[in-house]
Length: 411
Figure 1 (cartoon, rainbow, N blue to C red):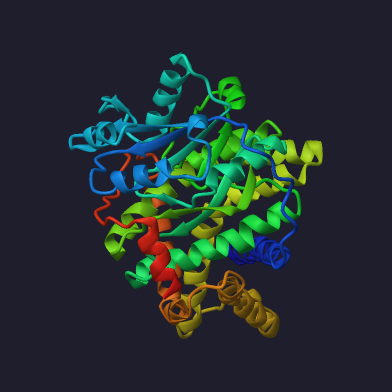
Figure 2 (tube, one colour; figure 1 turned 60 degrees about the vertical axis):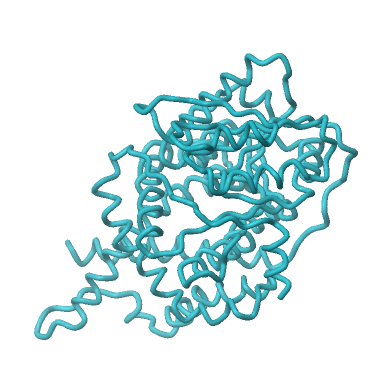
């Protein structure tokens, strides 16, 4: 019985892995850019902030200098349960400081939901809402790209996510490699195939009418994934704009990284549990590849959880003497699975090449397997603590401006 279960799980996991690997090949090319339009859409630019006095000023300065008509966008800093000078810094910079105090409902999802309700009460209404985190930086043409996509029919748009500090430590480099890989070999293939893209928590743009129609309603620990599921369930596929770039600050230490990723995995389990089956069966019923693909993406946290357990069991079984060996797909077809393993890791190298990553990034590929393996215990712990809805704040302390970051990239 156990033999059959382990073999069945290996087959399912191998099929999902093969599917994801095949998809990556559709990210090796880029289609021509869609039609461009003169600036016409108006934007409410929301900045989610909790005690971000160290970094929010640099983002406000960055946003005030976007290459887009100033009369077509306004900046709102959501000062969520702040106990520092975040609100005052926003006011001094001449943007809207919207203070929220609700310690019982903490977290970005709740803050956004509150801010949208406040926004709908204001005399000025906007065509779209864009959202950033306080530690971000944005390329000057960001709103121009969002304007183009909205005019071309997109209703939910995710920008290209990059990192501000890819070479601060091996952990920030691991995040950067993951971002380049996801942009090029996860998001772009789905764009090329007409599937739904995934929201990444920042650099997101939403048509106002859509937000008013379905509400925000994404208050889990991974509000971006939850809203993605809500959209795809309704047949609204988020799109990806490769050229609109947003830069995110990543934690420097493994401890801070593990805490952040634990929160992501806890939220991911919650969303997968609530959305996988409804979305998957609707996709089967409607013959919608986009819905099925998005459901499989939601299930990835369980794939990682189960896959890590199965792998560890097989490893232990292999080294223990005088015990009956469990069936292993790798032992049944060692050459095929050896090639599959090499290709799976080679994807990250391919992503670095395609994205023209700085040469010094390549040396971090040697430590990257440690980062990948660290997801196993984090995901395992997250499975047993997934009912924890307590949001944890990632502290940001480094002030990096766009010019400084671009100068380092060029050097």
